[in-house]
Length: 539
Image 1 (cartoon, rainbow, N blue to C red):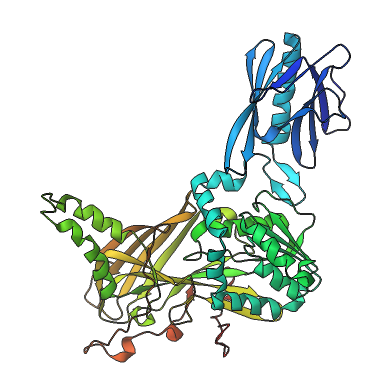
Image 2: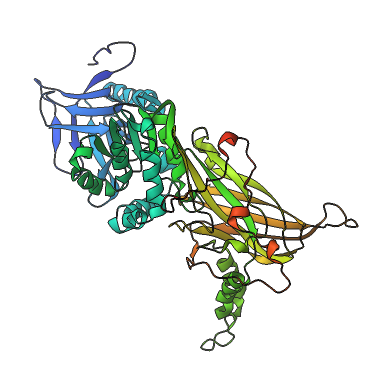
């Protein structure tokens, strides 16, 4: 017997079945003449649920989340409903089955029709949630990211030693603190959401600045440590709520006036947390709300570093042995050499290795779309400043905290105080020779992949030059593919690069002399270079 639906939207539907039993245990519910088994479909507070029970007040029931369940017909009067359950202790998911038996075929048909309709209307279609539109099924994060990568990612950031590594980056932490405290007007009596809160340090900064309430959203086990840290600071902690879960999935009771986060990875985009930051903006932030940081810039310039090039090339020398315990290793030399050059180099380098002014690519966090971050294409164009060999492309980033009172930059530029991000260089297997004034063109193409990182395709080319040269003809070109997920962490201190005797000092370039040329119109009003700051802690 079916219960009528109240209202225009289907909120509840009940059907009778003969019996249900959990296949993973001996639990079962069977109907009797006085008390039939009821199957109730319901939708409340964003959750679509199927519940089997005999007495609505009884605790003896079976509940199934319709978002993660499937129904299979075994016979005319018997079906099985498979549901996904989470075992948090073992950190894995597995299926459980509920066997459903009907009194007649018509009863089975009605149940299947109802199940399919609820899946269609409630699960497959997007639900309009209090914090924006979100698919009721598998979250966007799970669709984009491999489960193994996500597990390692959350395990890494769930450990205090890695949080300590970031907290002890005083350039990073100090800049965040200064950006928040100097812009108290943006935080006083405002609701703040800390996206990927980690230890909760940014939430505590926001509370110090006078935030009315802070929601610290953290998906890893670090959420428990954040609760401890916040509880240990009760004057601030009473205005902070830790919410454990993914930004793509959690629900918050109110919208935020300001988002704060540290979503930057190597080369700004590694780990793909910028996408989560943008999703948080769309779900939680009020119109015209503020974001700390507000925008990011990736800076790029060609470099010359003979030491680094030889170091990478020499790694493959092992595979040139023709008699390694009687085995000739040389057939693998070319493959090994290709593998070593496919690793972007993460270290702190001397800015004097740069051979042309840098250009930049801007990502405005307040307006960019999530899909824009799936593939980033940057055309490259430089003018060589010296007669030299180019070994690849050097990259770094900075982010702007566009506060109402103070605009503050956090930079990872060479020559600036070193951060835990360092800088990044893509070394080409075939160097290019350039003369002063010669044009260097190319392309930096970065494509996101499921391991929470990017594949980088780099091409650099040198064109002919001079009054008698054929205009636009490419003399040399070199290209390589890199995996940002698998860098070579060199991380040595910048080496001293002595001047060559035939190289005048004015050909060398310092960071202070590099003009950041934007190739993006978006955010042009915020495109001033990071200001020189007399306070070394926050520069």
